[in-house]
Image (cartoon, rainbow, N blue to C red):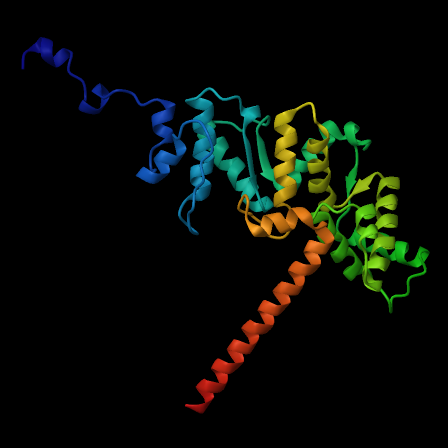
Length: 294
């Protein structure tokens, strides 16, 4: 090697092409994860077990859309169930982007819904400075409602009333609709408490956690001029309730759900679950009896 070559020689790693932010972002991902992160347009459904890197894929996907696809951070929505998981997602995205873009929609379902309501609450006649009642606040308010309605604790306790009202809200059943279809004495008392409870919440410029999601669905459904939001609201109504029921289009279960009022469908579904649970218990008892005989 002559002097000229030695003057212009560089370490081997320095000759390698500098990696851009997108390439660094994809480091450490396996092939399925990389495919999910770099997926093109359209919906993508991922089935993965615990510890398989679902959060890693979601956070890398969000950062990839911003860096590689030029998507505005304000057009990205990432939701999860717990505050711990939401904070973890924010931290990971911040590390990938170098900063946290606060115009991104990252949070729990309730936090995202609260943010939507504070920006568009006027369309529902709500005060944007509403407060969210926690369980202690709800309990005190319900006790006051039952006392003013002169409903004895022997007839209806505050917590069962709140649980029933919460389930009704998850099914998007308003106080008026609940009262129209209340059959049993328990349901009739809850209907009275539900109506007064919502009135008192409004007087206090407050909502509970179930109101956050229910009011957002109502908000989307009222925007009939925005077809995308209106259709999204309709899908939310179809999927509301315990477990976010996924019904196959055209199935007998979905046809039944459409024909029945939600409270009646809920009552029948509860009866079916009780029958299944009773049968399951009977099968377990029979197995234990057979095992004890051997």
